[in-house]
Image 1: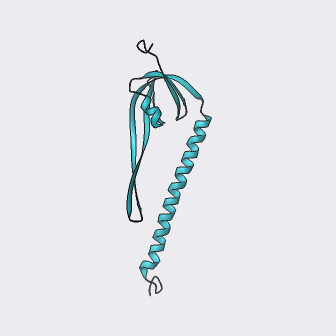
Image 2: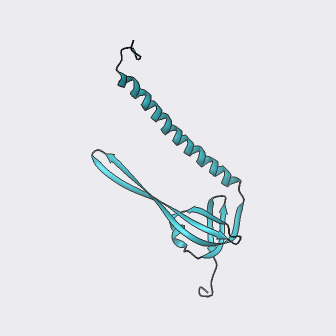
Length: 132
């Protein structure tokens, strides 16, 4: 007695494997979408705050993407920019910034940070005696 009634085993297992991979990929995409919506809603419900802060560190996250299309190999990259701010209480928060905003800040800068939840709204640097 054959367990798979006369069909070739590979032709019966491959569709199951493809189905599992499909469910995993779609599940990952849906998870990211719902996670993003949840973070957006949390930010929307958070108060807008303006607090004294110091730029403690800066970092970038570079992602590389390889695409194969019509026998051509294309490599692209994207960069995400992050800055860690420290508050007078000693607490720290890392926020995602645009490349332009990231470039305007230096470690050690002090000023007033405007943010809402995890959303960066701006940073006004304190004017020093040298700037005046």
